[in-house]
Length: 243
Image 1 (cartoon, helix red, strand yellow):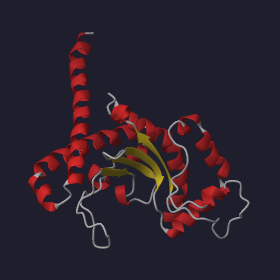
Image 2 (cartoon, helix red, strand yellow):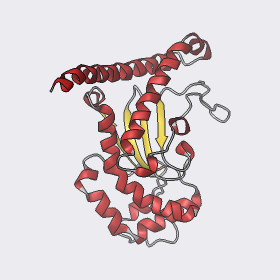
Image 3 (tube, one colour):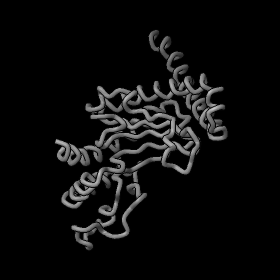
């Protein structure tokens, strides 16, 4: 009992620090959105270094939590997963030099560069969310994933209709979706809309109360845990194509 009395203040302090870190990160990103230029960034480089370190620490804890249900994540390093804040403006009409969010894609076999289904965490004043699945696969991989969906639709529907999964995730992400069923697949397929997708990704948006919750990182990990069966389904095909 005495041990719990000693530990409790530490736990409370840690939870308070996490909430303050999230507030600090979002405040920085808000200011960056208003002052998206190299002069302001240089003047606030120490603040950026601080929030970057805070975000990396959150992500280390998140990787640890994910590895409890997905063993393939155990040896994934934050540095391989986190996205740079610097934008590549060479081929963009938007010449602002910095992203105004922090993002990390946690996946084995390459982290953010991995073709495997993984876990994306997005921290942004405009909206924070978690994503599970495969984003923008190469054409050959996309074709294989569509074929897997077609061949194994009962298995995929079982995953989608599972109460744990559906409490967080609804429709697949539909950006860039085709208007017609791709060539080679029957147009009367009952789940034809799934074959039109270009990303096999689902996401869940966090509200402010969830962001402020005492166990936010564990909550994010639980969202990912419920999406884990989708990654297993997708990665069977991804690994088969890449073997």
